[in-house]
Length: 294
Length: 280
Image 1 (tube, rainbow over the protein chains, first blue to last red):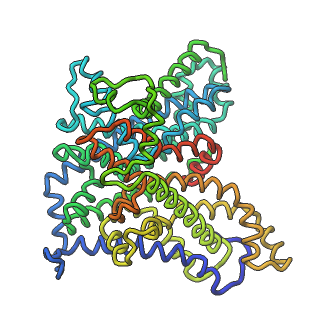
Image 2: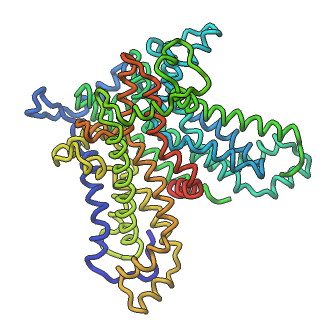
Image 3: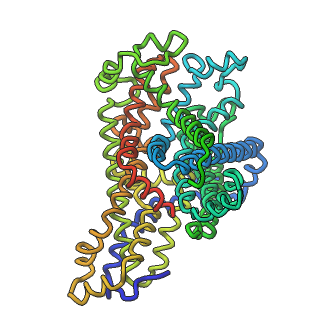
């Protein structure tokens, strides 16, 4: 890792400068993570007086627990659906904005601001729209013969959180796709046009392949987002229900640990999720670093 | 544009207008709901055009005490402070640690870098209970310190500053040293002014980040005195099933989401810069 060619000769100062960051990291990040790992191998008696080492018991139980496996499947479905929907819509919108010269910025502004809507507010907004008593969409859906009640119907609850989470993520993906599109050299497009390729052909054979680093980067970021940042969306809409239908892995860590006080199992779940983030982060930094070169 | 295709231009605008409608729709509904009286919303079909009660609803949100939550002004105050402390704290500690990592060679430098890197891999969602336990043991529950300090460590901001410092010509620092400037003076008089745009861009991103926090404040506050807006509106919405005052709740929700949205709209350049650069 590089420093400058010449550096300041100083003994104590650099330690003083990194100290605040490192102290906070150690106390609030590394120590708790270590505790989570430690207590995932332990069992605490109901009064919290003593703990005993139980090895991989919590992990073993988790992987035999149908509820946990179901939650894994649900999380995968949720993450995949949100990633595909929000990236797909964002790519279409970014491509459209990129075609425009004058009105592009106005559209961008109108598409970007939902980034600033927090997940929990996004959840409340969509919950209100789909609310079975006053919501507008159940009213509309009734004409199509759909009886909407996400408080009873697990599939509909899943659709609700997918819509809310995707809606919130469109602007982020839009921004990065637009940046990616703008760095595609115009000369390539023009050369292909002269050779007689139409706009759709140009998009699929030139623009889309050149966009692949952005697409890959966004896939990783979106998986990360749906796994971890959608807690607020779920808490505000379905709170994991009905009947666990929207209990994703992260929400389960919270509901088992903080509400259910099942510490050992919750810690084991935390550790599994940590491994997941580590893999995603390594992929992101190992392979995505090069995405800015065209 | 490569060639002129009127139907494609038409399609472009059509797609974009549709996209904008999708994006605006939920907020439009919320704003409409916030402009009506209590009866308009509970009578079955929700109106699609604005009513005349917006001002009354807003006044009611700001003045009325509600069950289960703190007064609105207090939650807004808490959210504001939380966002500001997180923004300032993150920028302060990450700019100095990036400075140490780039402009000094000291034993443990690489270790420090990796420890900071690891924070990327440990989002609060995966270590809810133990982090809560640490904060509880330190007696930080129900305090601004507990709300903000654990969120202040930031690998992304440190990386951003590190990357930026690496692009500053070495000669600048050598010249400063020849002229007799020490590390503190160089940092204060040369590096900080050069980092101004980066700091501003980060301010925008981090303020939004701080304002949006939901899970963490919910864990560490039990005293309504420290509730933030994000928690508050969620709690108001949660009791709405029993006592639906949708117009009031939606007025509160719209006001709670307004500050960061306005920041994105009016500081779009900085926002885009901050978002694109921190993710690099």
